[in-house]
Image 1 (cartoon, protein in one colour):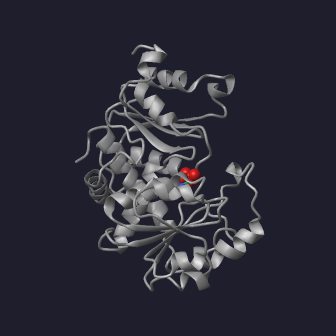
Image 2 (image 1 turned 90 degrees about the horizontal axis):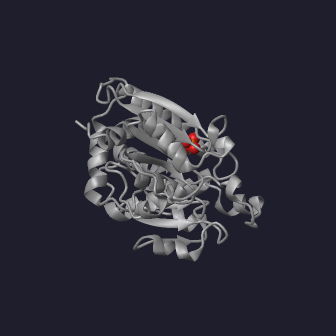
Length: 313
Ligand code: CP
């Protein structure tokens, strides 16, 4: 591996990398979803025996981090977790130097979460092993979009033609960006809803056929899926927004859920903030699949890891 930084900017990402949904086609997405159906964390299969999976997290995570780890271990891979706090990242080691260090330690694949958009892509262009994006800044969170699509398909026959309402802090949401790209590629129809501060008009340019509404009622009326987003307080610096006003106008409440189809699913990537973007009643209602999304995350990530390492069966 050479370390000349100017020429390598042109490199292609390492084979097998999953950097986002935007550059996948519908067939690749459906292939990954199909593969996930064959994965069962309760019945471990040693598909990744002898492989070392490095989990590199520069931001907090509960679900993504532990489900990638459980997924890797369910397939007999070895895993090592490196967090930015408590590692040499605190001493100023750069992203690429950290990546080269993990590679030198024998990593066969790196799962990375980073506050900056493009960090996983940069790593993938400098390494000869697959890099899996576990969330990069306000860019993408591809494994979340895939596990959400997988969860929808446990309840609905097809994604094509489904009406999906995405409600909340769309602007800061990598989950929304990945879900928007995925929906466009599989033919689901998306309505975005939120206040202008958290949902600028430009969001409609992310994919063809996107609509914006400024009332939660309009967004959820007739929806098959209500996808609630967390208000990302850690990314709100400089955004002037009244949380009380937000709650009144956009909080997903039972009376709003009742405007959706009778069999509508309520989703949220987590972590949920009860009483802000949704009520506790909605979080725990029979239509809520929030816990199921977490559970499905393991099978979906088993599929992602085995595909990335060329061991998909
Ligand atoms: N949905 C999600 O990415 O959750 P974590 O931040 O806990 O991983």
